[in-house]
Length: 189
Image (tube, rainbow, N blue to C red):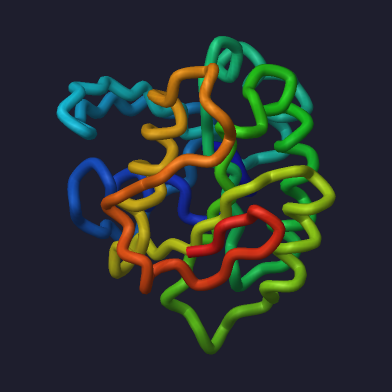
């Protein structure tokens, strides 16, 4: 999982693995490793999650390249209350797309619970997705758990999908009323 410092990556991972929100968390220095086992569609899956610290000095040193190498999928995350964190995702994307198929990268907007503090518009997100050819965007909140299970479920299902299938897939566990917008084959939750 990549994105700028302080956007809630560690909180999001902790919420998914442990089911609770912890505050405050210290900034991840360098990289943190999390392993989590889940069952999806009857299959047992072990995930190794690299929580990449957002400090720019680690990106510049090339530290993350070794951790991303061999990854099959990932999340690019930004803070909905800080538009610069979305703008700076282009750097993260360049790092990720050298190793990960764009189809297996999901865009996450964090801190969706802070509705009154929102600075990133849907149009801003759509433009980023179109420019960088990312097809799935999910707004999440580590505080209240919004869409965190959904984000991991979608990523896992993408990773488990046989390579010969088309890019269109059904995710039966997502109720239709949760899909907020579908435009140009891009999915918003």
